[in-house]
Length: 305
Image (cartoon, rainbow, N blue to C red; front, side, top):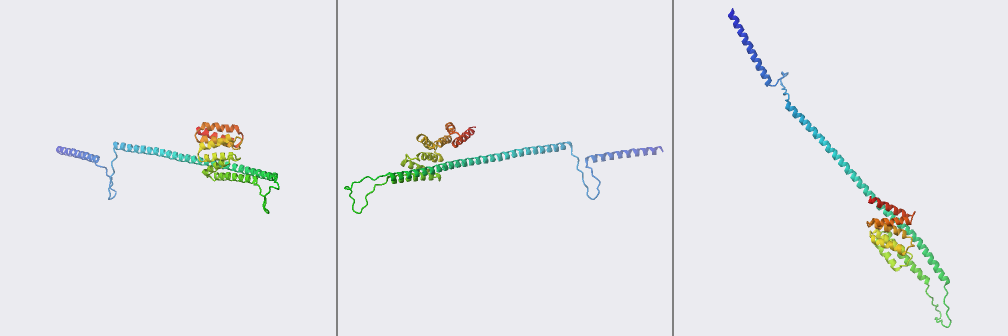
């Protein structure tokens, strides 16, 4: 009986040891092999192992690098936007500058047209006065002219022939005045049509034939204007000064002084231009030339600033 009990105890211990060995082996196998869910169908799905700690750090570093890249891309986009705005602003400023230059050229043209219109009106008045004076002088000479007495014994005129008549001086004077006016008008028309070289030649020809004409001061002034329009500023100054010195009582003296100041400004001699334009403002207050001179002085001041 005692022997049977010993045998039974030994078998139980062996069974427990075997069970312990089998359990340990299964535990080691489950730790080494992936956990497999029990198949719900004919397809078996494997569950990936959880990432270790180093893998999580790598994922975080990748996300941080991606965020940094996005931030850098945004900064570049902002810089590109600012550059685009600067380019647009530069183009707008260039357009404004071109528009202002066009307006200045238009203003110069209107001013030149105004000068030509004023001269045309003065010329019409001058021509009308000259024609009236010529007509009055001719009528006076014809009414007061007395033919010289001729003695009868000295008259040797063939029978039936008319006695010789002396040439009328009034006809010669009228013809000369007409030619003078025609030459002056031709030169002025060339200037009005923008043929400046032709106008210069015609005015010089007019002054050569009629240096003491009542239109001489105007001719010198328009010579200055024609040279000024062709940017021959030194020659323009010479002709404008001729008006001031040779014809101090001429109506063109104020305009000549003004244009001398303009010419010096175009030549870059700002101090000389300022001096002359200030003289125009002080000598001809409350006139058109004073207003134009003041505007040019303001422009010179703004250009220097």
